[in-house]
Image 1 (cartoon, one colour):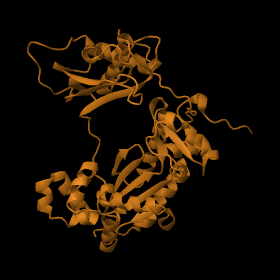
Image 2: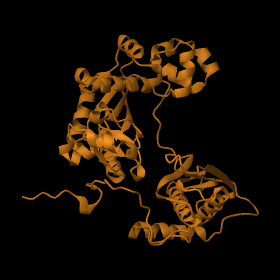
Image 3: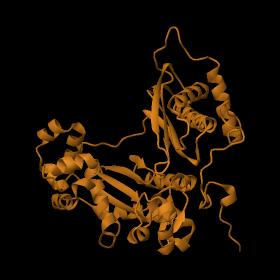
Image 4: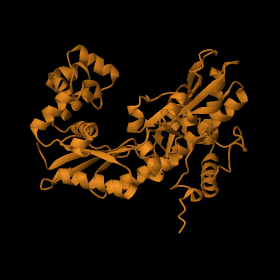
Length: 424
């Protein structure tokens, strides 16, 4: 084991539920569940909610009575709050090393180079203690010589909190082998459901079985990705930290507050989603060549006619214009729309992305040159005055992008009106 180059995975425990508890301590020790967009399904559970049997992804309209019977506090997703708390956690972690990969909203990989004289267990304990003290968010930390092994170490820390106190370090060959024999193949980071079934058919039940397979066979039967994962689990670092890269595709997909069967309301929603994609394009200074539009009915209501459709439109030139992307998205919507269907969800994806300062120019077709300054002015004014004061023609001026959030808690850190008041 080479202890001079180690990776840590810091994972926030039940992050959304933990954020709610930070500002409402009365929820500590009690079952808590957080719902998805439009109060649809359970997307985060406290350990207490898991213990009483509330499954992940449970549609709340089917589990409402169960939650009442088990005294589970159910809240709407409060994304502005969660995003802000995530940013605070990541900022704290950057105090320990400059090499940080924010892997998701609630977890990050850290790399420690030249730290061979450090006590890694004590270092992990310090990180965990500081995040908890400064934000109130509990975490688990796994440290190992590779990214994949740090993920395994984190699972051990999470699974055995009393024994590990939320910290586990794989710093010897004995610990590595013991950890790999413990973790099931389907629980290994990077091995999905289909891949795990293929490996199980070959007799792989644990991660240790996976690393014992011939490396040449892995590369031949699967791909270089699985080979790198196997090497990582062997302790040979092949998976490096991934720095922020411009996205290869940008999506805006949402469930509607209500079901819609008329084309007018669907046009307005799809146009709004398309404009959101265009704004994200401009923020990363990219343009797109392709627009994909998706439309689906409510799959939970089996008694109603069902329809799910999608179509793609390829543009003759790349663009980041809200006007062009919205118009093309509406055209795509009209192709897949079916009269009489009650639609519940739509999505717009822009892909085929290229940087704004480096793409092939078409001699005969190009974007209206007035769009660039117009988009710049719209972005400036909407950012300055908020609430999307400027919109394009397909959008409703009186309508905001609203989700059903009947159980929404205050946005304690992102809205001045929701800041906690202390009476002395």
